[in-house]
Amino acid sequence: MDAPADFRALPSIDHLLKSEAAAPLLDRYGRTLVTDELRATLQDIRAAMRTGGTPPDEAGIFAALLARLEHRDRSNLRPLFNLTGTVLHTNLGRALLAEEAIAAAVDAMREAAALEFDLDSGRRGERDSHLRGLLCELTGAEDATIVNNNAAAVLIALNAVGAGREAIVSRGELIEIGGAFRMPDIMERAGVRLVEVGTTNRTHPKDYRGALRPETALILKVHTSNYRIEGFTAEVPGAELADIAKEAGVALVNDLGSGTLIDLSRFGLKREPTVREAVAEGAGLVTFSGDKLLGGPQAGFIVGRRDLIAEINRNPLKRALRVDKLRIAALEATLKLYRDPDRLAARLPTFRLLSRKECDIRQQAERLAPALATLLAPLGYAVDVCACASQIGSGALPVDTIPSAGLRIAGASGGALETLAARLRALPRPILGRIGDGALILDLRCLLDEAGFLDSLSSGFAPS
Ligand SMILES: *Cc1c(COP(=O)(O)O)cnc(C)c1O
Picture 1 (cartoon, rainbow, N blue to C red):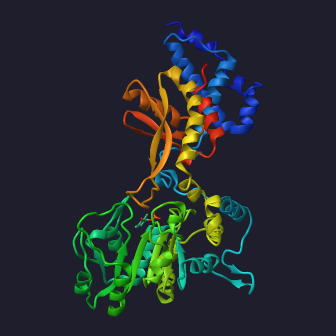
Picture 2: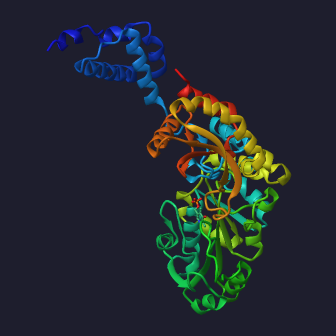
């Protein structure tokens, strides 16, 4: 055992911390973190020496230390390239915000703002007031209120309108959305008794009528946003449901999910019901998300009848589910963009990405393929341009895809693809694709920063 003598040859922590190379690290990361990581670095070196490794010089120690510090300091929330083909990817944070919204949120973060203060009267104001007018203007609703997300919107709407009473729902609409949002569970938590009517594939007006009782508080309609029932099907249109609810003196609550404010056919996409249409059909309340097709930050909107919105605003849950000033500022800026629908595709990233033409994406793929091949061929991967089918994601138009193009990276074996995918995830700016058909597919629909993509790739794969 000659190891102890070798260990003594290593410089001490004290000595290393006082050396010139340590100064910029101490400045950047602070003494506590640098000392911790230096200790860990020396431990690694000793472990390597025990198995016969030679000790590095001081420059080598600092290189290892810097790598540890950078890794430790790296955020898992750092920006990444979403090349999965799903534009509104819930696990990747859904909508990218418009520059106008980002600027508004930054201003709201940095300075005091009249969040709950009325600058005209000098009296206390309301945080929803910044959005209410815009929401009414854009949806035709009488009134509006805002909560943390659409799940919260459904929860509070049901609780405010139906606690202790019954809600009628079609068996074809008892949805589960990712992340354990199950309509029957939400209804239970909201204190509403669920009355299921109809069958999975067919529900008729007489089913709803037959379930109405004095205990009925509302009829709930849920947009089947993440699946579609096809074949022998029947559902009751919103307008007819509104009539049934009205006759019975109960409220119709329509959970639209993604809820778009404009007709998507303008972007060459299939139509989804718009919020304005749902309001015009006569729903008492309509709920929808801020960060799905709307293209803003996470939020839940409830628009509809003034008396029902007032009931929601009086509910104690409202305080628990309220939205902060950052998001209100970003939402206001996002909603304002809808006043000029012609420029939406240019200003709102969600629509810019969804409306990108297949031929443009293919050209981009052809531009990038040679560079990618140069980096990956030495590792045994082949790169081709391929056709892709992008999805909107977050439950909008679940079975429709948008033609797109991308890069298909094929390796020697399945294991090699997993290794490559892991290396792409470990880049300073990670690249996320999708493994399928024996290849790693990078759908380029959401790639706007081509130079950044190439930089990130070459930083991790440059031939040494
Ligand atoms: C997405 C969705 C929700 C949940 O909305 P979040 O904003 O994710 O909370 C609820 N209902 C439907 C129909 C949805 O599509």
